[in-house]
Image 1: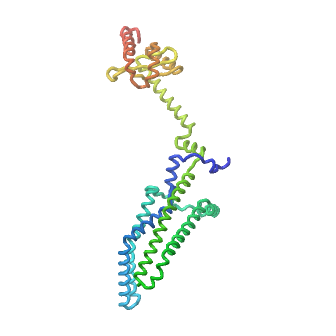
Image 2: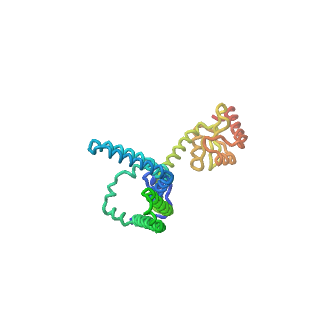
Image 3: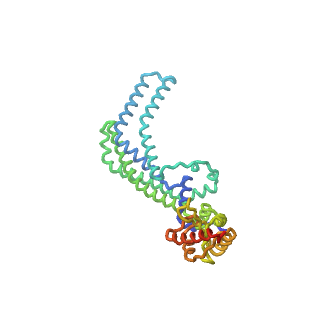
Length: 357
């Protein structure tokens, strides 16, 4: 049989297919959206905390230079200085890193919810297959990723060019400014470049998320054969299910026929239907149907009733109503109480007169 092609997979994915894909870590997620969220969060943090960060950084540099100028440089003295500098640098960058991590986590949760898949991080030898590697390298997805990377580089370069060109009239007067003023100006220009770039990348990230959703839905599509196979695996083989149902019906019929000798009366129509009625005044609120059947099964019920000494009474209307409206092991309808009571009273009177066994 020829292998199914993507053109044959025209059906929308079932809920089971989607759940299986999610458990494998296959979800619609845009890395561009995560990147721009991290960048945006860092820019916001930098915008509001730039002054405090610059103050702490200058203080750290002054302290480091002062300590290094007051000590004799050796392995024993430089090591504590470097360790202290490392811890202070980490303390300075820790909030920045925390903001980036929280932004990345939040945007991923918003995209796919809480998801952890061990299968997604399990090493697979198929990934080092050179043939499959070449197919992935020249696939549509790889082409799209290449276009996105080139587009991002072009956007960043173009935004930087426009920003610097707009700031070019302000560059000559910088020669008359101090170092701190020049650094402040460079920081403002850099922030302007990053802000403009982030704005454009947001649009690119939204488009990428839409593409990822489309590609994910396309990859989940199923053929009619796959849907039938999934239904067979989920619900079971139809042949086996049919056999189980037949066995269940056979067992229910055997239990029903075994209850016929306990009946008080069997009502017939007289040839096609038979309904066995049982009534115990001490334990039942109303007469109960304990067996019923049509055609062959009706003849079987009547045969067992005659062999067991159970009276068989012909009443076409009552038999038809009981057969259609009353399930086995259920009480008879209220509108038949009077008719059933008359039949049972007649049976009991015959038994008292000794005309029935």
